[in-house]
Length: 409
Ligand code: 7TS
Image 1 (cartoon, rainbow, N blue to C red):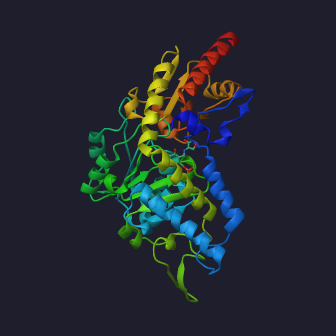
Image 2 (image 1 turned 90 degrees about the vertical axis):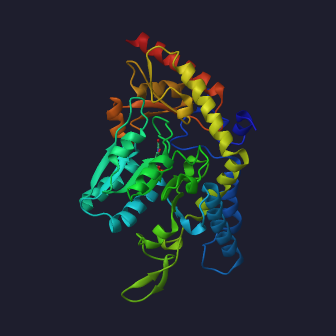
Image 3 (image 1 turned 60 degrees about the vertical axis):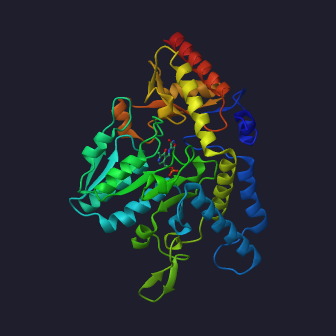
């Protein structure tokens, strides 16, 4: 299936915005949803809405099968070895917070080190900052090379036998770079640390195999991979999850409740207190079926091609700075840029008037922005439904933006 055919399965893309056909280049913030995902959520509410894991009635059984079936789809999608290793959460942010609050608070002490990198999203910085502040541990940052990539030598220098947690993003939401997770995990393990991966931008774009990556935790968000908002996943190695205490207490996650103490259900439910995100999980399951029907390898290849085309076309625009490596094979479909003398919010506003949606701002990565010496940037991010025509429209829009502002000043 080519991108133009795939695009037809996303009803939202077939509309005009400000009098122009919509070009959606903000999938790194959230992806659009194909009809099959919308239908799966509709069907749950229309036909079998019910709570899970309690009733014996038919609707309840169907809902439980749908919810637990989605867990198995996630397991296969990331090649985890057991469904107990798949915890449903609200998203990547919640998943990383779970690791920091549960694994972190029970395993980290004063003098320990937590290592992240200079390109991380706030969701993979602040939970570790808080953990360091609460425990007296030290937070360390792997620096970036000139092109915005991480070198393994720098990772080796930063990760020491005092390091207990290494947490790195799989794919950067700003620079688009794909990090060498497997190699960094090896360095972490040689030093006795666990490897956490922020997979918010990895899972939508690259085939994930948590066993091959040899990571200990992998966090992802459903809404960035054609699924609904409000659902995400924390993968964790079974023996680690078993050793970790729950952080949310209440219904669903208990085994036996006494007056003054209680016991927990086994994995994965001990981490899923309260009525779970049933429609969200079912929608995520449908999104995984959809992505697999196209093939993650095909999606990745498509994005590399679009990134190469966009890098070539955009570098023809005078006064446009592109951040990150110019070698498209080193990046997924994210291109962050600035147009000389024009604030990125103005760039995004003029593009929006042309029906082109890009994001402007600090992209929840303020330390990286400071490293880039930019207070803000504009960002175009691509997914499986984008085409070279979308990039042509972006380039035309940028040329127009430049002309508009050169006439104003
Ligand atoms: N990690 C990375 C690498 C991300 O890109 C994001 C969201 C998150 C974590 C947080 O995910 P959430 O689903 O829990 O919110 N990134 C963006 C973005 O780049 N623009 O909007 C959201």
